[in-house]
Image: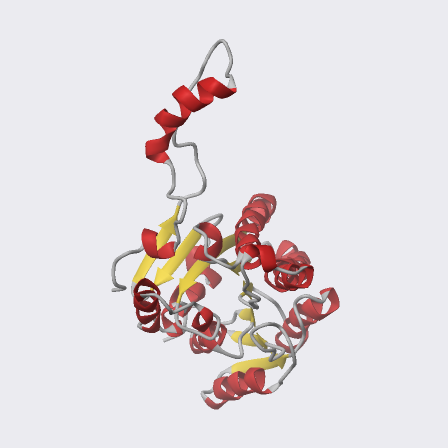
Amino acid sequence: MAGVLEGKVVAVTGAGRGIGREIALLCAREGAAVVVNDPGVAQGGDGSDEGPAQTTVNDIVAAGGRAWANLASVADPMGATSIVEDAVQRFGRIDAVVNNAGILRDTIWHKMSYEDWTSVIDVNLTGAFNVSKAATPYFREQSSGSFIHFTSTSGLIGNLGQANYSAAKLGLVAMSQSIALDMARWGVRSNCIAPFAWSRMTASIPAETPEQKQRVERMKTMSADKIAPLVAYLASDLSQDVTNQVFSVRKNEIVLFSKPRPVRSMVKLEGWTPSAIAEELIPAFKPAFARADEVSAHVFPYDPV
């Protein structure tokens, strides 16, 4: 029986390890030719190693699939373009782009350097822009295509020591929304996924307090392969009416996130003063406030299923 991606060509960034590798493997099993992009950098973005990308390609080919390794950095516009061009030149087309590549440079906000900020933004946000921009002319010409961007609950909810990463990941949601609106006339889709999975990216989560240790143990039960089926679905024609959404995968649970929407409103016809805000508006709004120290563990306090 043919897979849901038979005849499709998918480019997956950061596909040498972890979540990206599992996505590439499943897309290939579902019939897609896959461009496996990964420069093989360390978690912080340093160095290079062709091994991870080529290993994923070798495993796909050994299983009877089609794949090509691309070692470019998504942060470089020319490198990002080469990912899409490899897909078109090697396999004849491009049908889906999976913006999974990411790096971390975690540090508490007041100690974050300009380089820590820009390097994470360049890969996690600008890199997704670069690859998506390169694919867009092909998607327009063929009146089809799917962008799948990897966001994070670090952006959707918040996390300690990740101002750079959180900003990039929430920025991806905004970018995806604009792409979905701009490209709807050509039948092109754009969606986001916030994954819960144990990988070298999540291995940096602090595990010092009992609460943090419990959170890490939960993460370890969530394997990267659980993320891949939703990606394959969104890359396939089965999802042709699904766009401008934010999903999350937590082991065997798939979650749909809401977009920011008004939750409370109060009108004062004579206008507001600072004192009136303090005495009237804030007490009325306070029951609907998000907790000041909220992280994903507060939103998902139960064990993964």
